[in-house]
Length: 434
Image (cartoon, rainbow, N blue to C red; front, side, top):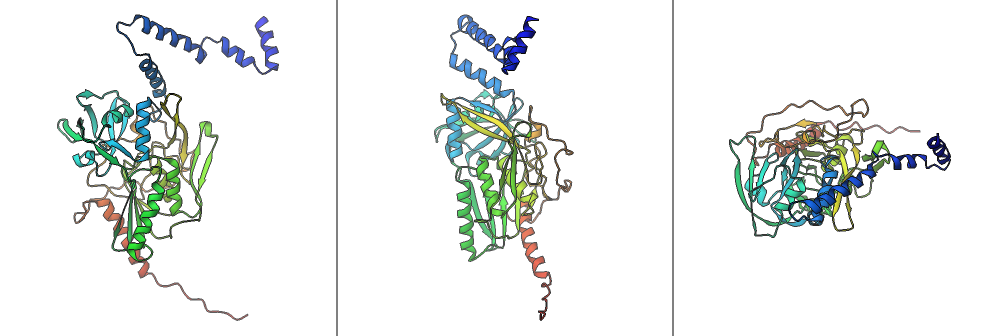
């Protein structure tokens, strides 16, 4: 009775629930007493001297790992490495990694790096780095171990589904300058742009690439291939700017926080929009996160045809928070949705035209294979655009570039030009007097 009276009086001041929570032994902050007790027991009784900072960082890392595969805690060294990578230059071998259960797997090797030259592919599983087993490591641990001064060596033991036994690679670290945009002109009029990931200056690099190709073509381009294969993502704002460059209006992406609240909608603008030439977007199993936002926006808006294989399926947004001691927290804060309202979590982007690469990415990790990943939303909740079922096509034997998907993309643009020329001109309406 006494407790009930106290609660009734406190409720008038709006503090009843707080008072009850404070007395609730199961309240989350009460467990801090247990944590402090365990820490004290370890410090005073463990058989060897312990590093308190290492213990505390390990505790934080363990807490964050319970959330989802993309949230992580980074100690000051790992966080500094992440900033270097985002800024576009670091010492390493050029592997984008993810942890899948207890395994560390390759999402994509960056082009023209020690890893790509050694023959690493998406889906390869790392077993050891410099003789140390990586089973149970977080991706940040593996990335940190692979980074180091250019010119130094690192030994990687890896396995692949098609190999009979693991293989050992000794790579020499190099300066990984991730110039995120590459370009080339085909047929003197068809533009090709490959975006490797989304960094601070990706949109600026893209604009420069487009201007360069226009100058080479002696005028406007007649078509464009935007290559997002092996693109693991990056900065959301840069993905939005890239999509905006090819769209003159409409929604690019919608992000929604906990419970669908705090929705933010990014829209395209007519300023600085590219001419509406035919466009193809190339995707594969290494196309993830920010690159899926771009592919989904251009597909849903009808701006481009998507060609390739199913994308990774990472439909969540992370923010990186720098903490007081120089460490960092990467935290999942929202889901994102394509213009038609699709949540592509687990599903990925299904291409309009399914073209299998010569080097299959069937072993590549995808979001749905990551333990603890978010489940995709029910199709009855979010409208899903109709897509063609997967129908793998045979690789073109006469492909001179050893890149079936790129050849199909270019042939699609060439075919568009032929069809356009074969169409009869629109009828001319006779003027009428008034």
